[in-house]
Image (cartoon, rainbow, N blue to C red; front, side, top):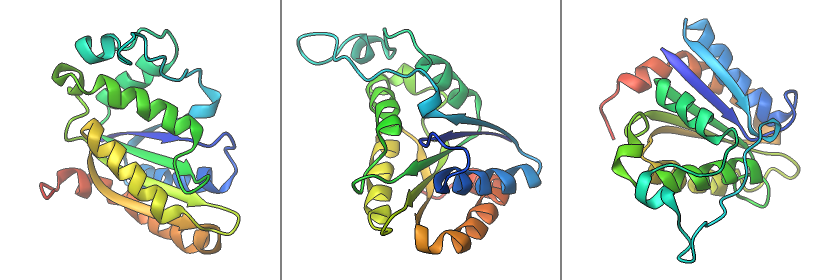
Length: 188
């Protein structure tokens, strides 16, 4: 099975990266192929709301006019069998990099043809709160809403606090190990 990992953290050694990497470790250990992407290191611009009505060809053609890394990453999602999104929690919500990406993805998936390879694709969301550890659960709700709006089949959400990171790393590794089971599940 091919898995795409999209991480909204710049640091490949921080808490969010470690959480995403635990999932990846489990998935690779189970024989799955995983491609990892760190959004802050990519060139992904924010939505421009191209036309006066706040939309653009995203609404009519299911694609974006901005020439950056967005389209290639969407193609990577479409060619994968499973997606995992790891997000550092700031202010109880999605990080700027993941929000920017998902805002544009949400717009193009308003066109049915653009949902090909995304609609029904199993996905896991990981929300990692550092500092005082608050906001992970609230962020998980935001992530579920956006991923579902894009058409993903959200099969699990894992809120993580700095204080329970060690325990959650084990859980995330097991979650990655069983990704194929999630993907095969027909339950909503």
